[in-house]
Image (cartoon, rainbow, N blue to C red; front, side, top):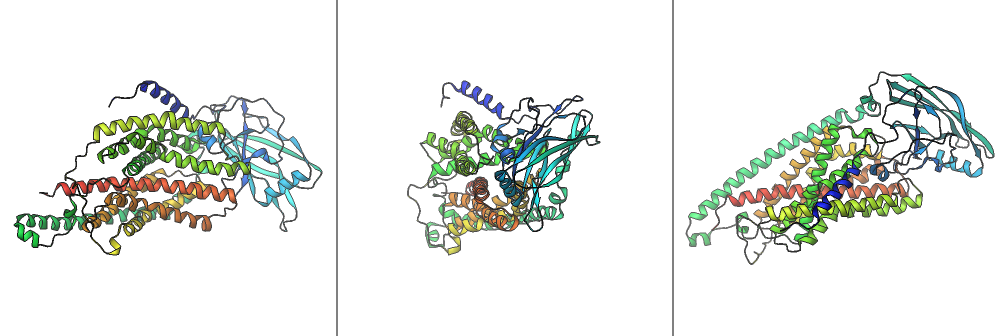
Length: 588
């Protein structure tokens, strides 16, 4: 098959667009190095309720006032920041490197009833705000109420202590003082001070204070990893022992049957997985959707593996939006993986509408993610939240899908069809399907599918708690070595479980193993989503339509993507197992 005309131009455009996605560590308004008395910008980011981390609004959506300084260097935001709702606004405070500022008033709030009500609402809902200095985050509380909940007070004085090491900023601390009672029709003066102090903290270690080793490296975390690892050893040993002993008996029985004459074979009790050798490599039902899911699952696995490795090498948490930008870049770059595995599987199953399969495979995951984000975006716009994705960012994501992901998926599909698209099965496929005999209820594919995801979920659910807490609460996840180990454990457990399930299914002379192996592994997603309900109601204090829709919407996307990945891993491992056992059996 010849490549489409204009492919070099498309590839060049794709490469240029992908370069724009790379997280730029030194491309903001400064390069993290300063001269004495050089401008240092205090950015105001968002404000929102403490218990709803994703429900954030622009800092100046509350009636705060702006400092007098107007001219600053321009700020460039990345795609990851735009998607995460990072909206930096200049505070107006005049801060210079190593130049102390004595307590000074920078603006005045004319507190009418409307502004007071806005502050009171924020204090009642435990609003706090986030700021940045040199990419270092700072948090502060808007105000507090008295014990009776009748009087409300606003913190009006920001006391900043900034640590420096050489010509770099390595530490920032904020102390909120100046508690002023909110009384309508009064004027409230907002003030600040800046104190610079020398620090021994290295620039590379300046984010260590934001990490929580006592939480992530707790002995429960270590015990869960050890427990999962022991379960893997036990499961692999059990599967190996059962299958090797059972298969040895099966091979011995089939060899004995080959030595019988025709009458003895007819009178014999033929049963087992050999009897379906003429149907086991029959194309799955709905091959177009099935191959698209397998291709997407392989791509998600590749993305997960690469992003975790990059996160282990580079501290992505030190740059705003860098993790999301990296994930988008890697997903776009690994689109040929999707096309290769999905296209080759579809070709081996005799599919002829390969262009349609390529489109479905390319847009399956992006459509799911963008559809969910589009729905949640309506709610964010209604709430005037900073999480509302700008129209320009939506257009950029669509351009990535059409001009990067689709062409690369096409390249992968063409390679897959030409390199591994031939159906080289070890057994011939019968023209007429063999009738499937009745079997016990627990051998039905529906039961196998429901039970198949229990063990894979059991191997990862402790890690799910730490991942959920880092995303839905105020923790920075940094133990990517744990995550890599858990991913390996999940793959091994998933493959072992699906192989056992498939063997029992084939032994019951049911050759519908493709969808069963995929769905039994993918059912892990159901248990993860059920766990997310438990986490929401018992481990968090989230509330409100916006936060609830955001949580369950994106948890559905996460669980579905995890299920597709596990399903693809289970199918690929089971496919190798099925091909192996039928290759070693002599078929007349």
